[in-house]
Image 1 (tube, rainbow, N blue to C red):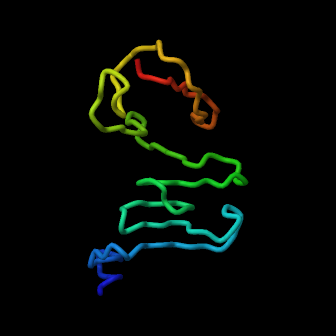
Image 2 (cartoon, rainbow, N blue to C red):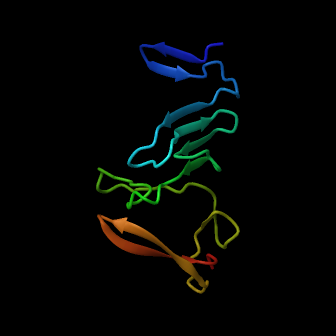
Length: 130
């Protein structure tokens, strides 16, 4: 089995595409991670990636409460491009994962705290898209 392959293009793991060959980077405890943990884990069978955890979805990031900062930082160098692109089929109601509805009648469910250039702000979340 060719599990790890190195050549001029870099290092390739699981070149024979066996579903049982997961990839894990572990660490001992430190300032950011209080107990020994999987820093990066790729589940070859399910195609899931976990950072700081075993993945419970396609991409799962677990932040540590004692760090005191955001779990994810997205930095954009190109000042006129988006930070995130949500791609999918848009619906005119709440039946899909994207909605083109501009309705504001839906009841508010809460808010998500974000930082914009280091300043805390809130994004309001509605119970429905219409």
